[in-house]
Amino acid sequence: DADVTQTPRNRITKTGKRIMLECSQTKGHDRMYWYRQDPGLGLRLIYYSFDVKDINKGEISDGYSVSRQAQAKFSLSLESAIPNQTALYFCATGATWDGSNEQFFGPGTRLTVL
Amino acid sequence: DAKTTQPPSMDCAEGRAANLPCNHSTISGNEYVYWYRQIHSQGPQYIIHGLKNNETNEMASLIITEDRKSSTLILPHATLRDTAVYYCIDTTSGTYKYIFGTGTRLKVLA
Image 1 (cartoon, rainbow over the protein chains, first blue to last red):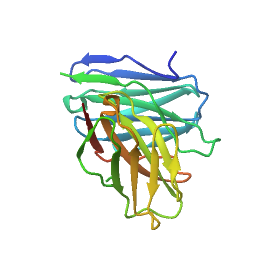
Image 2 (image 1 turned 180 degrees about the vertical axis):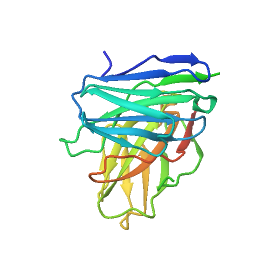
Image 3 (image 1 turned 30 degrees about the horizontal axis):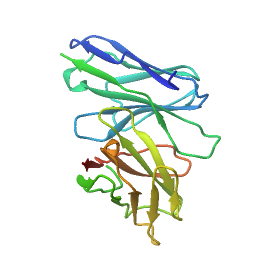
C-alpha cells in the first residue's frame, strides 16, 4: 500500500460547491503539506502543518482551509469552489526528527470546477 | 517567487549522461539544494540533496560549485524512463518549506 494516499483521485464539481480533499499517511511523519499545480507550472504551497496543533498558511491560502484531524490525516477544503481552482492537488509529508527536508508526495487529486 | 532558475527544457540521447543545471544565486550558508522529478502528472519524487559537497546515490550525482551559486544534477546513463520535469529547490535548514520553480523538462530520446 502507498505511504501517502489521497482521495478522491479525480473530482468534478460545480462552482459554489464545498468540497474536501483528503490525505492520509502511514509514514508516521509529523509534517504535512498541501500544494496545487497548474498546467506547465511548478507546485505552489497552500497550507502546511508541523503537528496536529500547528497550521500555517502557504503562498496561496485564499479560498482554502485545512484540518489536521490526526497526525496521519490532513484535509483540504474549498468552501465555495470556483473555476480557477481547477488544478492538480498534491499532499506531501516529512519527518522533522530525521533532520531532513525531504518531502514525500502523494499521487495527486485532479480537481475540475465547472 | 522561486529562488532557483533552470532551463525550461533539454534533450538527451538514451544511454548518455544528462546534465541538468540550476542557478541558486541567492542561496545562503545553511540552505540545502534538493532535486526532485515529476513524471507525467505524478507526485514529485525525491532524487538527491546536498549542502556543500558533491553527492552521489543510486539515482544520480549532484555537483555543487564551490561558491554554491549553482549546481548540476547528473543522470549518468539516461533511459527513456528518465523523461520527466526536474525541479531544483533550495530550502533553509529548519524551515521545511519548498518553493518550486517551473523546472526543466528533460526528454530522453531513443
